[in-house]
Amino acid sequence: MERRDLVKMVLLTVLTCGIWGIVWTYQIGNDIAQLRGDGRPSPLTDIVLGFVTCGIWFVVISYQWPKLLNDQAASRGKRVDDNLPVLALVACLFGFQIVGLALMQQILNDLPDTRG
Image (cartoon, rainbow, N blue to C red; front, side, top):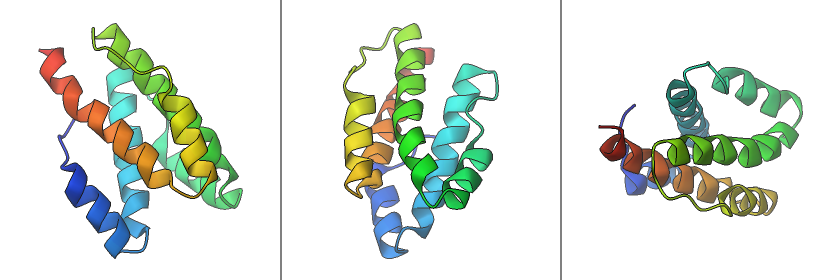
């Protein structure tokens, strides 16, 4: 799992008009799957479903992924915010999926320190 600079990721997403956001989404999903160890979520499948459903699936994963990430953070002894899935969902509904991505990335950046 790689530590990523939040400012760089947000700037790349904005400067590429969201294209880097797709890559970033894949990276976050892959990191969550590595933490879980069971291959879930499947980021490539989720991204394809997001496009096939015209974005509806992105709304679904904006709730599911933070919930999975919270579970993994809690199991590693990190204090979690139970409101993260709802916050990411509401941000996504209003067109600000980048907020959810940034919040998840922050948690992922903090996890390697607690993993040992």
